[in-house]
Length: 338
Image 1: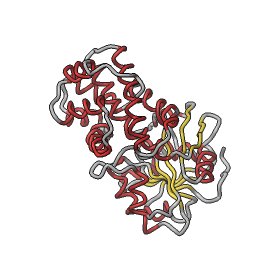
Image 2: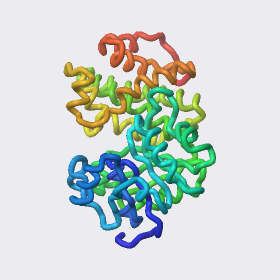
Image 3: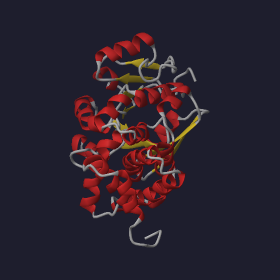
Image 4: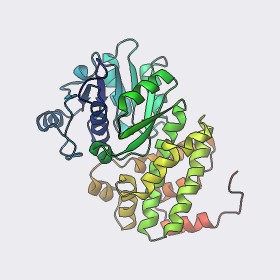
């Protein structure tokens, strides 16, 4: 720590809570980092305060973290680019960075979720915008930005079709309190991150309506089964969903109130409208729009996802949570693993 492990900096695009936390971790682990966000006023505040006062006020920036004034400055000469923006801004960010990428420059992302309008996974969006020959990787796993910012022990998955790229990112991130595991199943890692937010909304609804611990664990366990079915249909490996980016991230997001999606469900159960709940949380709640995209993808692939469909009905069709739960409990008896 303190001396750069890499001579070329890493560009982190997205200065929200997660992008900031990852930039801090890269720098803490010994890599020079340039952090960029689209709001010039916010960037100026980050540079002045040497911390993200809005999202991570207790996490000062290490010396190796530089706040980039513009996108070109962030990307120019970077070893690789890491995009950490919400899913609804992913395509726009890739389109903005595309003119600045040099031949052979690789891109990774910590963005989770299907694209809302198309139902595409992030790697499919990246291939549309940047071409199919660009080197790609995805980061996901059971992480809260505030804990990463504080340097608390954390483990994540880094997946790429290029094992060398996955290993490079994992090494750049790893430190005594941060462990990165590598995988080639980037589709599975993406699907885990896309589905868990929807199930976390359901967990918040369930707990907010006092359905009890039994119901919560049934939702998580059967929700994992739905996640696996969809992932395999999309080309993922089933074992990926028993790891950090599947089961680990799902349990974390469904059971801890640091999860915005879980808190969103709790607020809905308390009588808030979706709009009022999101305004109260004050940050993007990925699970709300993800439920609509997931509903479209599951229908397109003819994958049965009764829990996720029930959450969709509650959010978009005025469904009653109690009726949805009772409907799930009255489904025909079947084998647990089909």
